[in-house]
View (cartoon, rainbow, N blue to C red):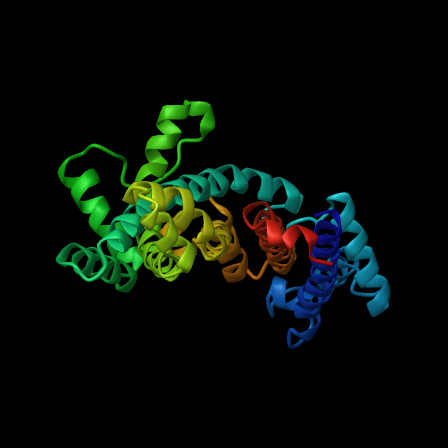
Length: 315
């Protein structure tokens, strides 16, 4: 187990280092002068030179990279030109919205998908199986922004039960903040639940065809016992893979939903930084999201060893 964990951690660190080179190169391949691009064509030469000095563009390439990498290691991602505040402060403020949104959405999608997958797999080939997978296919096909608008119309405009958008902040009270996240969480969770349900059903069906499942049934083990004690546990590896990918998507890929509900999250921050040509913010946030995705994949890989004991002794 220790060798497996150390190997995965080293691979994760190497991946983060490679990703930092790619992200840093984004700024270098931007056509023209990045400082002039950020300030616009009408900027004065003094303003351009001042921003070049701030961004370190007057230093050699390797020096700039190692200076930026050192800033990443110490938590210094630079200073936003648009907002005139450290990028770290912007990220901390936006993570307070995006992280709870991603966690709530992931819990909802998993809580919906696993019972549906278990129910469908246990009734393979029946009308119930066909109907549940048909609904899941519809969930995969429907764009989440369209579903978000539908939720706003029903629960915010018609029934007036939940806010249509905006985020009051956690200082306004936990319930008020959570109310603002309910509709976007559902809009994100249902399409992801449909994907997870289909993957989990396929994984469960593969396991249910194994010899040890037939042996368990022959010994008189009940259907729920077979599903929960044997099938689900042995089908967890592909399920964990999808859950890890979904969490990474929910944390980093919610630009559309955050704009629909006017939520000040990471996705909306990246969108605003791109439109405002704030390359320092884009560079810092993208690197953070890349590192987060790699960390999530590392956690999923380590979870494999917990689920599957055979991986613990793998060199």
